[in-house]
Image (cartoon, rainbow, N blue to C red; front, top):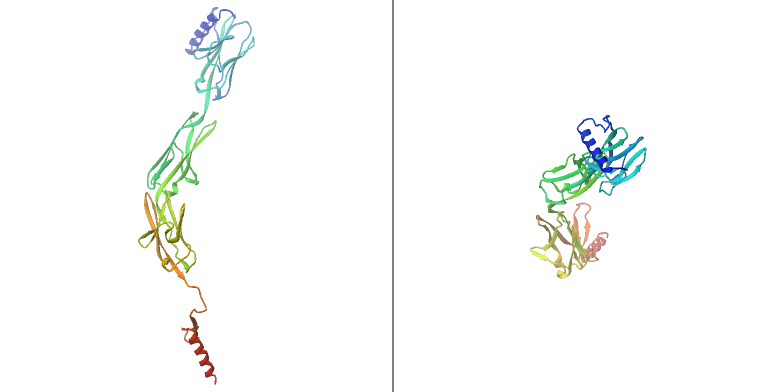
Length: 346
């Protein structure tokens, strides 16, 4: 190819005139042929092929992006390693741009100089970008009753639509079709995982935020426990709290510690157990379970009472069929009653 510098200058002048809507003429003063191709839409990251037809008696060719020369004939002017020459012959002039990015968007011009006049073909490249969430609220820990704002921002082309929903536990009533989700006076039942979705015609991007709601403890009503003397007895206490509550056990006003008088205390999450391995007379009475976290406390009382097993010496109760009352007899009294009944028969 002869005199490439001359052609580059000529191509640059042609482009400037085209962009101003002015006619372009060659050295022979004949008007050039200017052709506008349909826009090409391509996704970010894909490979773009730009091609124009040559025709007979072509002396110079060039592909340009705005004011930058990509190729002048076989000579590469672009420093971008993604740009390469695919085909250059009498019929076709094709270049390739790999891993297309948003910066590649714009007008491209193929300028062809024939023996008679210049000819240009221009095309506008539109780069579509999949959505990407770029700014998302961090995981939050708040106290019950607080006002909560979750924010989600995303980039993409076309501009993505953004929405919020409560993912886990699922709650369709708590959602938003905007970048912001407002939750006033949040309750413990609104704690969970929230999902932000950004979507356009190309793809969908999702990210999640975990929302923890702190609240003071509540405790289930204690259930009184009856135990036979010398047997094993277990008192149980259940609490609901975030953060997790600590347990304390009391007998009257005296706190009970693990191992105290053979008593074992075992805490496991929301439960606490107070175990007596060999219940004595002194163990019977009223016990208090206290649950505490940084937001407050609650308590419940549990009574450990005695169950008496029946024995041969247990008092006998004889039902009086006429009066409906019960009479209590000892074994000696029972013998006298039997003898009296025998005497009455004679």
